[in-house]
Image 1: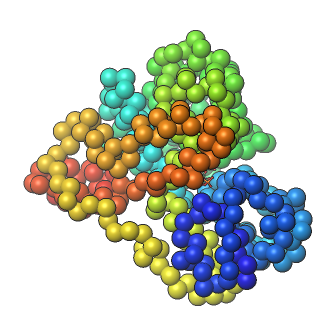
Image 2 (image 1 turned 120 degrees about the horizontal axis):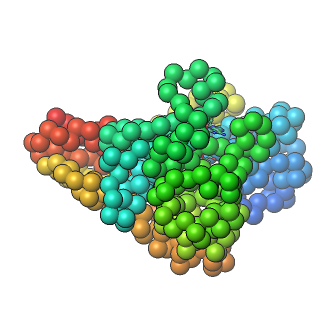
Image 3 (image 1 turned 45 degrees about the vertical axis):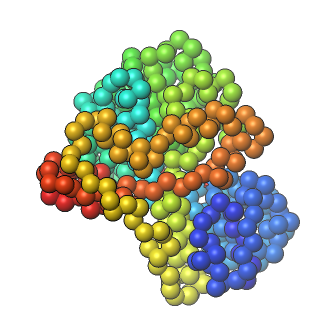
Length: 376
Ligand SMILES: NC(=O)c1ccc[n+]([C@@H]2O[C@H](COP(=O)([O-])OP(=O)(O)OC[C@H]3O[C@@H](n4cnc5c(N)ncnc54)[C@H](O)[C@@H]3O)[C@@H](O)[C@H]2O)c1
Ligand SMILES: O=C(O)[C@H](O)[C@H](O)COP(=O)(O)O
C-alpha cells in the first residue's frame, strides 16, 4: 500500500509505517502525477483535494486531513467516488485556545493594561472557541459567545448577537469556519462596515481563516483607527499576506495557532484511527507513547501574584514575541511564510508543564487553565 503524506505531519512513520510504504510530499505543491499511485492520501490545510488533484488516481482508499478546517477538501467529489474521508475535529483546539489566551496577555502587557476585568467575545463557539473560553474563565474573565448555528441547535449555553458582542466586548476572538454561502456565511464577516462598528480600544484576534476579515478593508480601517489592536495568525491570500497590512498588526504569526506538538500528534493519530476503521484493522498504537514526557517537573510556584507573573509562566510555554519577530523578517522572502510553518518548533500545551505548588493555595485555578500537577 502506498501512503502519501504531507511532510509537515509528525508521527506518520510511527503510526502508518506498518501499513505500507510512506512517501512524504510538499502539500502546497502536490501534483496529480504524484498522487497517481497512492492508496492513502494524508494532507494538511494547504492541499486542495479535488477532481483536478485526483484525476489520474483510480485506487485511492482513504483521504485524511489532519486539520479541523475542511475548506480545502471537495467532500462532494470524494463522496461521488466513494472515497472515505476524515478530518480531525478538535485535534488542535487546546493549542488555539492557549494561543489566543497568551496573545491577549501579551496585548495587555504591551499596552500597559490588564486582561483581568475585560469582557471577551468569542465568535464561533465550537471546539477552538470553547477552548479559548475555558482558559479565560479559568482566569476569571467574563466571556460572551456568538454562534447562531449552535444557538439554533439548542446548545444550552448563553449566546448573544454579533452586534451585541461587538458593542459589549473589549476583546473579540474569531473562531468560525470559512463559509461562502448561506445566512451565516463567514467570508468577510468582518467587512468594512462591520469593522467600523468596533468600539474604541477593541482588541481583535483572528485565529481561524484569513478571509473572515476583509484584509484590504482592515488596512483602510487601521489607517484611522490606531486605538483598535489586532492579532492575526491567519491571512487573506496565504501564503502571501498583504505587505501593507503587517505594520498595522500587533502580533503576526504564519497560521501556527494550532501548532502544538500535542495538537499535531492528535491530528495524525485521529487519521490513523480512522484509517484502521476503514481498513478494518485493530488500533494497536497509543498516542501517549508518541509524545515526549512532561516537560518539567521542577517548576514550583508559590503563587501567581500578578498578571505579569502569569504572562511569565505563559511565555515559558510559548513566547509569541519570537514568532512575531521572525514573521516580520521572513514573510516577504520567497517561501518565507511556509518555511516558518515548516520549521516551527512545536510548542507544548499547558498540560505538558507540571507545576508544583509550594504551599500557597491560591494557584488551584492554574489546573483549570490546563497545567498539570497543581494541587491544593
Ligand atoms: N489558526 C489555526 O491554526 C487553526 C487551527 C484550528 C482551526 N482553525 C480554523 O478555525 C475554525 C474553527 O475551528 P473549530 O474547531 O472551533 O470548529 P468547530 O466546527 O468546532 O466550531 C466552529 C463554530 O463556528 C460556528 N459558526 C459558523 N458560522 C458562524 C457565524 N457566521 N457566526 C458565528 N458562529 C459561526 C459553528 O456553528 C461552530 O460552532 C476551523 O474551521 C478552521 O478553519 C484554525
Ligand atoms: O484547520 C486547522 O486545523 C488548522 O488551520 C491547521 O492546523 C493549519 O495547519 P496546516 O494544516 O496548514 O499545517
